Image (tube, rainbow, N blue to C red):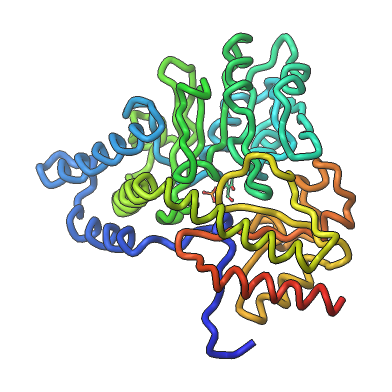
Length: 372
Ligand SMILES: Cc1ncc(COP(=O)(O)O)c(C=O)c1O
């Protein structure tokens, strides 16, 4: 590794760098909207208008009404808010959810049935239906998995939920801004989104709550967000979120092609040199910017540290689990042994990733494999 080489960031599924226009919008918003949106004077009205405008843009992207969208501090809060409403109830949750779903379900006192995926990391709708009990209060299945990128059959699961009259929650954190997400199409009642996975600021997201769904507040206080999520609104982050969404929806098709091409290039380069290479999820439909590969015998922990020394950033699964010694619950749920799961690397290129970066990362990994 040459010291002057620029870092290669292939961990966009963990977080994306805020787009320059987003940073500009945040700074501009801090300058323009200095009043508390709840205040009575005219200046506060400007901040309220900004909030409303952003809700109009965001709700338009997922096909809901502005009044069905509630800002949160991100995906984790949105997911916790969901399960706080189903305390003591039976919930059917996919076993490959992000920890903010699994731990929220457990810690908010839900009676959980976890549904395992098939070997490709897909939650089969029939398996969800089999797990239902007469008193099931909620079904929760993500849109796209954060560790494999595999897209789930949420439309079919939503149809089952509707037929059985059970609310359906979908964690769309890894899908929103990358692939089309429409709450009417997937027939969900609740949908979680986070801005920092689509080039927006960290610390903001939203929960869509279908109008008419009985749903309580989790955070109490001054009555903001229609008395459903109190706390002075984070207008700069709101502005940044809107600009990130406008950008994401304007170049979604281009990014789709670009990121798929980057992943295809990576996989073909790796496969040519590593015969045992295994792509998790095989050739199932994946969200454009995520792929996970198992290189049997090459520890992910070792590879991540070594690639890092070469200025290449990848992960071994969810970023928040990076400091845990336990193998990923997603990979083991897909049937990988703990040893195999400890040899999985997740690559997630983004909007600015170049062919040269992909080839450099692939060659660095091949180098580690050949030394093992
Ligand atoms: C699928 C999924 N859900 C929820 C979250 C948590 O979102 P946030 O970081 O905004 O709290 C993440 C973040 O990694 C995620 O990938």
